[in-house]
Length: 355
Image (cartoon, rainbow, N blue to C red):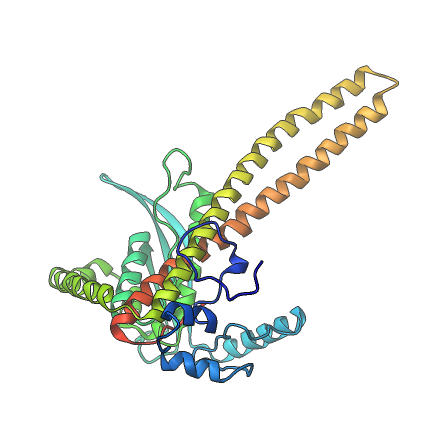
């Protein structure tokens, strides 16, 4: 490798994530500007701090700062934060009790939303309503419209491939319930989004459809017009800092998508291999009953295959339940960040992320 400065970050292509510069780092920003141009005041201010610790408005850690000294110190800090939150939190929301509804035109699942709060914005200390997925989608769209400079948590994907995943199976419904519960808890913990009036209505209104229809046609037309106008503005005057962030997010999402496809292929092959092992193991056990002198080693082979089957099943379950959901959530969050960065160009605000 040459000793010169790193190349500018492309939006696509087979590049390692380790070689990807931070979008607001000094070298990448200078190259994005073009060498002779003057970087923005924000970037100059960020560089003037040198190696000193920076304190961001949203509590984040800037690129290049060190992580906690050990995993135990991080765990202790997280536990302390949880204790503080438990004492000061005034809004609790849970998603549970999924129920299937079969109607003439459609079949769908609803979830019970239980809310407990001591805030003055709520008339009662506790509410219990039922919502379906499209209600959660409505809430997220409303939060994007009313809080355009904040990063809205992503929802789990709505559409599934028919014939591959049964969206009414207990496993799928439980997985979606957990994702929806995490979505609402992230909004609940956000210092701005949790006070949004649409979020209040979502948690308390018995008939949410009636609220949705109020002024829907007019607001939709106005909203679409604003989107078209701001979209043209964004294309004409996109700040270089946001362009660098957009390219960074595009490459990051591309790499995550590749990892997701590879992981799914690995899981598929593991499942196929597991089926073969379960068929192969009993063969040796049956064979050992017919061979007196070879009975012991054949039983040993059978037991070894059984152990391999158990270990492979645990590995597959871990990837399916722990790795893939987190990976896909990162992909969804990267999409949300790109949407928010585009809106920030128009509003000139600062994003806050409820991670």
